[in-house]
Image (tube, rainbow, N blue to C red):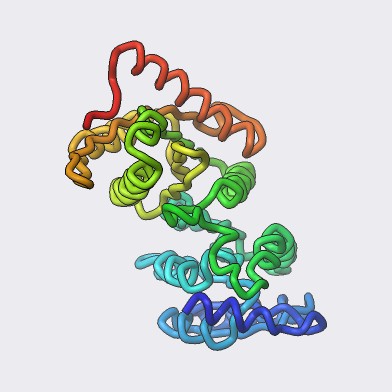
Length: 317
């Protein structure tokens, strides 16, 4: 399905207006949003039902999506998850939120899959500006999807299927801007497998890569749905934790550590027990560019790895 969306977008003419799918259950608000975006030069496809978003998304291949986030069920979040999978994460999305609805702001911060938010205003100016900014930010990813064989290469690590380092840096930038606008915090946890290079040297590249893929699966099964896992180095992973302050990081690291302590990979007559070192930083306790934040998390990881090596902790075969 994702390939179909990408291929259809490939053949879109450059002179066509950008298409925005707007999902808003309240008819009056939907019409106001349609008018605002239409006057800004967008082609708007409005719909009031969240269950219609998926079929429409596949049919029209929009350049961006605006979802009205509202209690009590916050259907926009589950729809965003589905559309992100369908579009391979390359279609910009925004949550449209009532400015006084603090519960919805918090819900989207904590569980909104790093999708940016924009307050609903009478003029709609901020929505238009934020939408254009998102489209500029994603332009490089969309261009990368144009070749026939690109697939999800612009977003994903080819070995593990996790997000790759460049795309994680884009998500960190989005999360940073969202916190600067709305407040809150996020954390970045880096993890690395102990002794992977020694395993590769002793047992070969194939076994080491199978262990990496297995560990990527373990990571994905351990974190929350709102968290984003990426492979950022040869044996290094990173997890973006939206809405998680520094005081919430130890619990997450303990959960990951416990899960890896139970992990076993049986392959080629061997039983591998992966061992993982972890390091973390939190924003805004530490500020900097996305690259600086990731580098700081990796530095914390490497300090932890050296301590583990000194204590004799490592991969068990």
